[in-house]
Image (tube, rainbow, N blue to C red):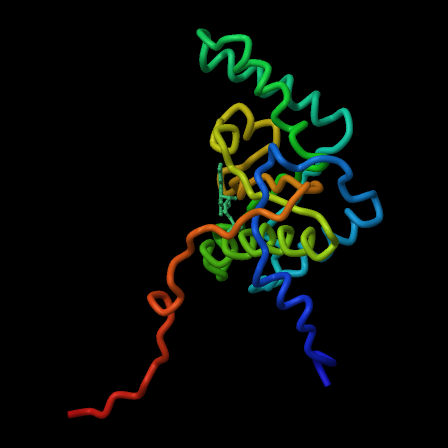
Length: 199
Ligand SMILES: Cc1cc2nc3c(=O)[nH]c(=O)nc-3n(C[C@H](O)[C@H](O)[C@H](O)COP(=O)(O)O)c2cc1C
């Protein structure tokens, strides 16, 4: 039998999952073993054609501050009028959470599997990361922010013509459970197909 049994606790956790703002994601983050489990779980996504159209770049420890220096320098190039507070914010951007995972969508454009489906698979990696982190006892947020779309920052990830940054998943511990947010009423988004009788 597969799956072996229902897991109501997991279902409850996923159905009540909320993102937690990166600024509220404190230590501790996942240790190396748990992080590896979260990452391996995240990559277990549907993938038409078995192309693996994604890759991950992990930021942790002091490397987060080093990347912040790069962000701050780039921000100053883009905004020469930037004040001290803004530059400091950029320096500390990746220090908001113990772990940041960049998810890159890496497509094969000439492949018979449409690029759109390859992009969807990378989106599934992002969502899986949020869910796996949550089930492992951590909170997370999927952010793009300005640096996702900046050509210089993209070049540091060696982004090719058919690649994009799907986002950055910030992972850490949250002090409290966030409130629910307004969501679309599910009946407005779901309908059941009913066979129509031909006139
Ligand atoms: C692709 C993508 C990019 C996002 N980028 C940002 C962002 O740059 N800034 C932001 O405040 N929220 C961003 N969000 C929204 C949050 O990650 C999150 O969806 C929101 O806080 C509520 O999510 P929840 O329903 O999981 O609690 C993004 C969401 C997605 C799907």
